Length: 165
Image (cartoon, rainbow, N blue to C red; front, side, top):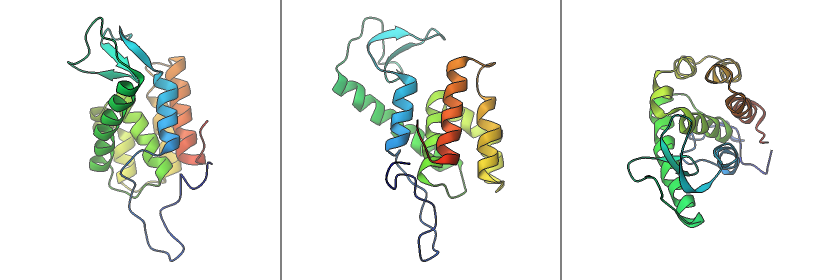
């Protein structure tokens, strides 16, 4: 663990601290590692035009070129959307690393996937969080694609062991 990036939900006085609202350093590192950064638009395996750290949308077209500063801002803007999705869909308290793992999952699979997932349902029922992360995240690998297996394993490690890499 780096510093106190993944502090628990209860402080020394025993009062709960609020769930984080922004992705922490380790979560951002995880997302950047698995998304990679390309400054020229390309079509991802799903044939969707993509640029920067996995940014998609109507603003991404063939032949687009951006700077690193623009890629960083696109990441920040995209993170805002997925952070809100985690806040809106998860009703239980999360520490920074649990929050970051869910933001990474949502960033990769989509906010709708989080909303409809058994992962969300089990967390919100109050089931043991480490068990839920360990059992549910690995189910989202598109049939065992190696890169997605590595990413889901990294998200589980971040949520449960508070470590990345």
